[in-house]
Image (cartoon, rainbow, N blue to C red):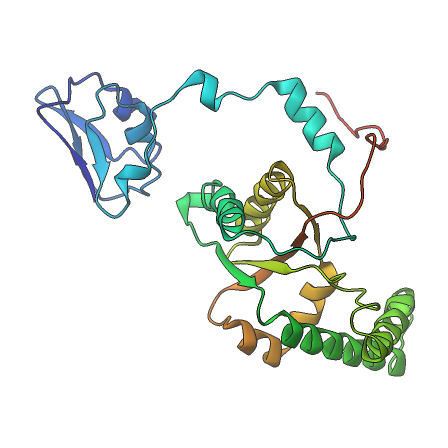
Length: 273
């Protein structure tokens, strides 16, 4: 529930103007929240010049006063940071500090969600990674074998992936450490789940930026997401049920590779009208 400290409110009306669902009005020169259509986005908290607004469901101690030096990011540096990022598949044999994992998740937690759903959840797998690997390789092998046994004109283009998954499983069985072509012996993964694919993807993007800022590396494992789809054993292992779906799987660790420059990309496909 949104509450307004009447003694602090000066009736400037900025919260009224900025409230998208129009759930705030001025009554006798003071802001009054109707709490009927509110989505608890917090804009009223952020815009109030007197810090007179609060939400009782949230931890208000997390609210920080704006400081230009601490909050601003140079646009060119940010663009270079994005350009320099690489998907990492070579990891050092080093555990990731708990506080760094928490900070990565915080980057996801504070990412915008549609209608402020805040429907994104995070599953960190470290101790159980060996068991999850076995389930994942087994699932991909089965998917690959089924595809090869039932090829159609529509699925023939996926034949190379089917063969790859079967071969990956066999190689992993022979030498799990040297032939881990799914997780590349990384020490941890973060699985992002959400009701909305868009919300989960937006959170994952910010989480990747934080991962890089912390000196870590990551790549998004689409193979794992494919393996988990329809695999009750994997979903049960992860404790995923209800309306949640796996959006991304971030394989994370300290990079065991050094890059010296950015790489080129196709020209942007832009239509100006």
